[in-house]
Length: 602
Image (cartoon, rainbow, N blue to C red; front, side, top):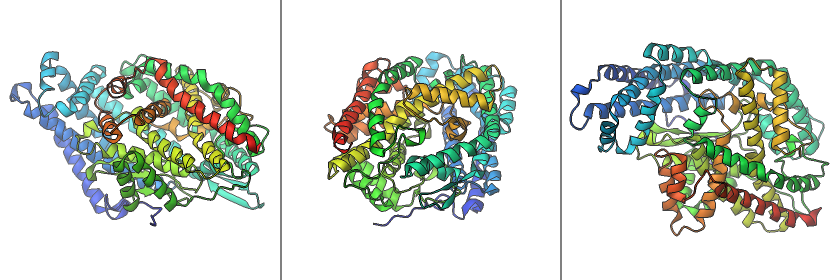
């Protein structure tokens, strides 16, 4: 079957960014927010019925607005991501952001209403049918009320954020969208590519010399923009630190841990296990360098593909072949996963075309109003691309099993969000390795599979170490671009245990995740998700009805803490190293297999 490389956004609002349906929805959302705001202000406990019907209506209206806002946000940002340099989307992005600001006041009012109830009364209310499915989320909102300032101050802070933290994040995206570089390929032809395309080439360009030229040009490109990037990063972090302090967070990690519903002990235990196992990658990198014909592994080589091994030369993977690979192997674990993936391909939920002007990276976002998802990525035909699509489809499947639940049950944290995606990736990678027809092919596919643990144990750890050091220094004042380069180089040296022959000092400037305005520390949840999914993958082999058990776990991801989720569904304690070590041991097994099979090709 032939699938389109371009997504269908008209199914959400027909007519593109100027869609009359979008305009009508934006106006409706404003009306709904105004009505909700009025209802929150007028709420009186003395007017309540025995079943707390007025409070139930408030929570229902709130969720309707949340779903609608997520839908318009996805629609506008999807157009922007696919046409990254076009300024036409900015007014719409600003309008969507203004709606979020307008919702902030009544949302805080709802939190304060929830906080007015005595604990015993509140617990009784949560047992009523209208609240049972969303009780965990309402308890979180009630706790958040304790951090709120007075209404006027909260309103001013929200409005200032539009031209503050949100504006600096948008400024960075504008900057990234204007950048390009020129390099000379293996045929001595000059090519000019965007920053987003360069990011894909760094991971996948088959020729090592050309890959190094692209890396050098990429460093120069970001070096020329480093002061502008440093401004964005400093002001995003400065605004975040100010808001965190105002809301009573003890340190810069308290908020991201709260958002991920996990304890600091769990985070510390996970990183301790990562640190204790990072040396296992040294022999892997030594062998990879030999197979690539290199003296060592530089930044751009860490996940570089092996293009020839013995008599085996990997063929470029077509998009249609990648789709079939994913669908077929999802079916081995879950027919519902396979059906979901097939539906996403057939109904054009995925934007995958490789072209200039697209946003770097990949993502999945839900479209709550129509119970769909949209996936954004750039397909280049490398052996890693099928796993990337599977990763994003894993996110989509996660959301799809929650569509019958209230919107507040769909707000799972980033760390568990990365679980379903990484599990899907593992399924496809292992299937590819198992289906290999020769040792050489198996080595190439194992090498591609290792891209994930390399990222999760080393690259993500470097990001965390950098950001940790940066926030400590930012609390004392502005951190210059030169200093940011130093911090990043030090983080990469430590996280990769000194194996890199050349580092990427400007990674802090080039990585979009550092510039997010909503989720702080957009890094450790990836490693959590990888290791958590590894545990689920092992657990899956022992389940007589894996699909049912897996979906039950996914449906609870926004209904309890991370530690409770692991204990209830997997029977493990995340504050102890055993669970995390089991994931590391799976990586060790792959490395040992890789070393044994590849020895004949050295």
